Amino acid sequence: MPKREKYSHTTYVITYVVTPLEGDAFQVSESSKKKEWIVQLNDSTCTCGKFQSKKYPCPHALAVCEKLKINPLQYVDDYYTLERYYKTYASTFSPVPELSAWPEASGVPTLFPLPPLPDVSEDEEEKEEYWEEDYWEQEEEKEDEEKKCRRILSYTL
Ligand SMILES: [Zn+2]
Image (cartoon, rainbow, N blue to C red; front, side, top):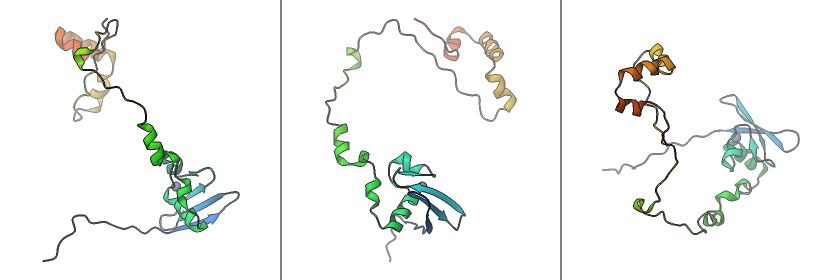
């Protein structure tokens, strides 16, 4: 009886067409979806936004690196190095004392959160009413003091 693999992987093959533009910019096109991006290696940017936000090459930047036969690792930010990782934990961390050892707070406002939104099955008009002040005033009149404390955002010193 053949063993089934625990995990199955799907491989996608995407073909990018890389066209040099002015300066160090490259146009990367995916012909099957008629999409295109502009990659600038020196700025580590791509119009998809992932190259600059994640600080490592997006698939479009990788396509440019492949076209130029250069190592894409040079565009991976130092943030991902072990050296930076170790520096994160190099400082001494002070443990938080037990709750009973915490000093008593004074002069700090106490916040009561708003209640959750009404059931999603309720109609839209009712949801709009929920956020209007009149709704809250009417609701306050209906409820006893204990419930009011939970439903109203208030401050007590
Ligand atoms: Zn990209």
